Amino acid sequence: MEQNDNGKLFKLIHLDVPLLLGLLAVSGLGMIVLYSAGQQNMDLVLGQGMRLGLGFVIMLALAQAPPRYFRLWSPWIYLAGIALLLAVMAVGDISKGAQRWLDLGVIRFQPSEIMKLAVPMMMGWFFAEKPLPPRWLHLLGGVLITAIPFVLIAEQPDLGTALVVGSAGAFALFLAGLSWIIMFGLALLLGAAIPLFWTFIMHDYQRQRVLTFLNPESDPLGTGYHIIQSKIAIGSGGIYGRGWLNGTQSHLDFLPEGSTDFIFAAFSEEFGLVGACLLLALYFFIIARSLYMAAGAPDTYTRLLAGSLTLIFFLYAFVNSGMVSGLLPVVGLPLPLFSYGGTSLVTIMAGFGILMSVYSHRRTPTR
Image (cartoon, rainbow, N blue to C red; front, side):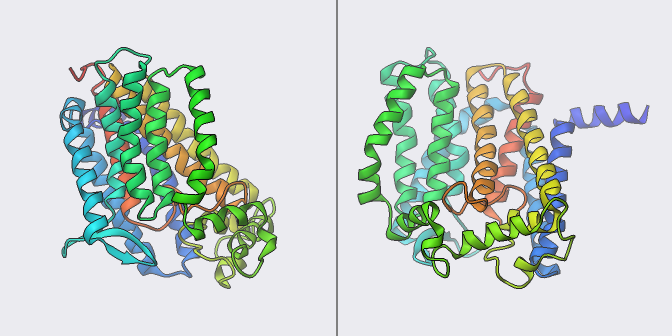
């Protein structure tokens, strides 16, 4: 009887229990690893706990809003995000050679994070009443919606976030039923543009990251140091790991950014292959459950929105785990719900709030 009452309560507040349990499992495991990777610094753990708490509150709040409100506000959120990106170019704070932040006195944040939600929302809004698969003119409109924030973010420079935003638009086009012939043509076009991108868009340090990915041993004490130490940490964990609090690479400061970008390496060292597989299985469960929820969306807008948000989460997990394993270039994307950080974490939780709203209100189309 009590179990039925709990189920009714979760339905009443529009939360999906399986997805919620998956998110709690990953974020709780992340807090445990953060305590070890952060040299047992409780301030670090408490700060992350506050950010997670804020993220879950935002997720709960967004889950209550019917999707029709997201659709109504999509173009305005997108335009506001573009305006904030232009403001960053004009008056943004410069930190470590990048101009990515807006300081409003009370709060300091990255407007580029907003576009991870705004682009899927705008793409869903744009294609909601149009015939699918999209025609060439509509396809051009979708490309422009994605390209404008992509270029503005890449100029900050923030290639990692720009790639996420660009991928969000590409995911929406894919989910809109873009034909394989057009997708293949676009892939060829992008391939042909790589030399231009390399010459005119990418900065020297970004080019060096690609060269380091291809041959990290060419500069083992310089640009290749991060990825070499990351692979050493993963390999030294073996099958079962060294044990919690017993990692040497992170505790002896061989592993840079052990609590942020390279926390997966710190986790793998302490919990081994078994722990890494368990974590990846949890991510797979969250992604599978989210795709199932997106498939039940009642209309084009909610399907494109929910599917794109799910694939963005997949991209975070895939790129970060591949990056620290040496399978992909280092682009600075955090491991979702695991890496220490603020703005990105809150954005991801907001995305899950929107996804839960879509699923819990699926009997009500957004028209």
